[in-house]
Image (cartoon, rainbow, N blue to C red):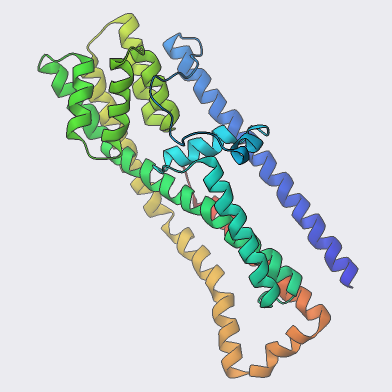
Length: 321
């Protein structure tokens, strides 16, 4: 019985890994297709990212150099930079390693997840992922704030150019008048082009630092206008209108999917509530299962199933607009 349960869990884990890899591949192909469409519209070849400013993160330490061999440094540094943190990759990895060690030691000391080995591994993974979760939450919040400020920024640029200011001067005025994170990002764009970097490269760097579709459209519109001519102020005004309409549509989709989110939350919390209710009403009911060798595997499988179910429910109700 134990061998069958272990085999089932191993096969289930392999299937989840395969599904995750396949989903990541499809997402990468979709993003690559969007980038290709934007490059086709602008008629430009791929421009390598260059900057005349000092990159965040400081000097590379040995741990960072080790990770660089596996091509993870740039991705990690990009996530940290997009979160608005001044961490280096080495500092992030040290925090992750410290979390793993502390979690493993606590799990060996306290048997929280049925088995001692599962407690050690589970707490090590949870505490090890905390720095990454923190970075991603900060990144999501910062990109969300930038996206909310962006339509007003486009209107500001359009009004400044209608008043007779050049585009570069309008960028400086926008950077001075806007709060972070938008002000900081456009300040970097102005500084790069002011120190000799072409405006096209500075805008491409902005699109790299802020991986939002609206920013990509803005960069493409500016570069297309520089080649073909036209009223850039009018283009930016219409782009701001489109972004606001996307926000309105996103709010409607969020309201329509609220039932699914609440259902997923109830289905995820209900087993925990029932467990605590049983511990109060019938204290010996679950203790007997926890003491049985096969019962421990059943409880562990139920916990894993709950986590997997919650993950897929979140993916289903997370509708992107």
